[in-house]
Image 1 (spheres, rainbow, N blue to C red):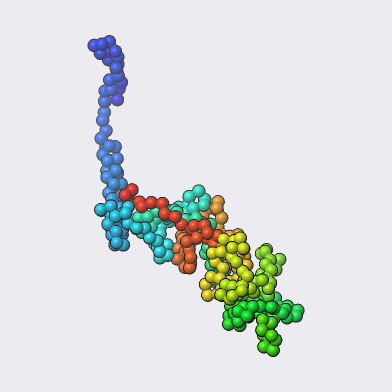
Image 2 (cartoon, rainbow, N blue to C red):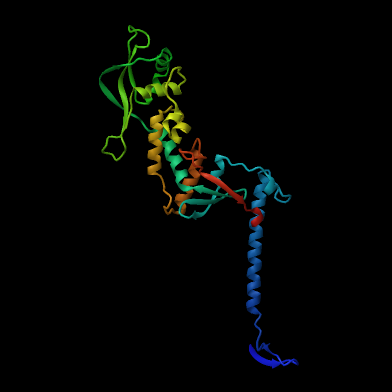
Length: 291
């Protein structure tokens, strides 16, 4: 290609481009590549639309935008990991063309929290001498009817029918956690926790109020440890330990680790928020129209 200067009638000069050679092979090659990319995108879009229709939608008549969005725990198993965003969030693509963003710390924290609630065995500490209790009649009856719940939380009682009502139960063992040498914070339990557990079990006269604990985890989960009803103080302890042992914001994750974090949400009772209430997942948009 050459560039020559020529003069117009008005006296102005302009550049003239003279093609010595025009090679069409590169243009043809790029055109073919563009067609292949377009075909691949159309095929991917058609596959997503077919999946959408199979699940009750109609991508051809605008149903993609208007359909009520729903997410079940089974959907976690079919999500495809796109990658990690800002070392704190996971991007995943659903089978129905939806793009989701997940909080990596919140997702890992709720998994560890529910695991601690279900699997942790509270240790018992025997008292030197039985500790007499003064309970309301309903609290005393509650303990006798739910003795297995109290024992699973680390309490042991001695019952003496000869004593006057409200004074027939004595504490012989209290729960404890954290030895001071295992790196875990020690938690102390006492008579107030007996009253708190009675309240969770519906006894009248219980003095426990979850609002007084000042802990979102307690307000959300006290008494709901799955098969075991947990003490409010135990719930706060599990939430604290789950937080410290979970993946943190700023941690770099492998694709395998990201897939594990997302798929095991399927196993949880309540995978939608962390113990303290932070959402684990949020919807971004439907990608069908973008494909």
